[in-house]
Length: 182
Length: 293
Image 1 (cartoon, rainbow over the protein chains, first blue to last red):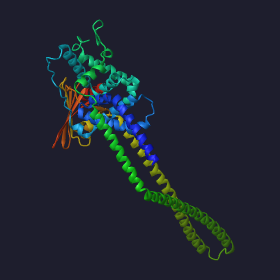
Image 2 (cartoon, rainbow over the protein chains, first blue to last red):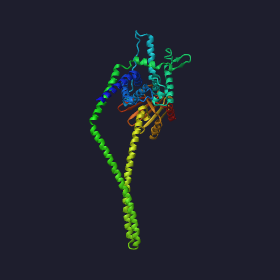
Image 3 (cartoon, chains in turn cyan, blue):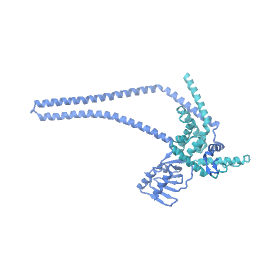
Image 4 (cartoon, rainbow over the protein chains, first blue to last red):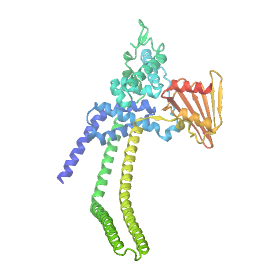
């Protein structure tokens, strides 16, 4: 009976712990997943799967990296698993682009800024996966190149060269189109 | 500022990509809602409840499982004892045969000496047959022993093999978990053995080459299997090179662009469309050029 109470208490504390992690890193997980799968419903499913995995394996986390890096690694691997699935091979996700209409309430500059942000997001999304992976790790999830290389299971040199290539590609796409903004 | 007008240099580090992506995603409503948090927590709780049920069920079945485990230990102990006894008796049989053989040889030698001319041929014949019999027995005992030894060895080999296989499988699984790369046959969705012909066309040079002989097709696949590809979700292929593979029941058209590779597979029932990028794109192009020459 006492043991059951103890188990219940430890379970409650681990649920609180996972809730804290969801609140702290949830947006990073959901958005990273979205950048991979480009579908909010799938991204939400992946979000749930990731935090279930985090909950189940939290005791095995040894702290070799930051907990955020560990969670993002799980996210990336879960996304890759999803993209590798046979169903997804046959269905190419369609990008839904909602044309922005200038509302009278919105300031023109605000709309322009929003468009630029959208353009940048689309530019990142249009990168080949191997380049996008590194950009997401380094620029979106604040990892060092060494951490990104570890998370993506590639050599540090490869991560560096992919990042350089990604920069070049983003430059090709964005240069001139966002110059006034910056 | 990402575009430095003075140096005319595009600087991604100053683009503040994270904030811009976050702003764009926020604008599209890609944010964690309370509902999503609650659904996730519920999923975790449900999973925990399922686990507890499972544990309870296991507790109910605890007694038979315990008995089964005990029985298994007893059976394996009995098997070990039997193997030991058989081994020991085999060794004893071998040594007794040797002893009997020696005694027989001694007796024969003595008998032969005593009865020098009485019936040497019969003695020899009997000698030979007895010797043969003894040899056979010895051989059988030795075979049995070897079989036992080999059996154990084979079991060990099988065990080691299984363990190695499991470890290998686990490693493959682990690498599959992280690796996203595929081979050419998977990209083309046609194996080399099923491919009837391969037609390569270069849009730039207008050159084409057709491989219709099995050897040529196999050689082409052997070259292409040195490449690995990564699945992409979007991208445009300009189709600088086009590879058309005709298989037994499907046709695969692979368009290779500057970065992106588009693969369309058509069979009787469906058309699949996939996008990839090559891990070593430059080498792929170089080898295609070589094939076209």
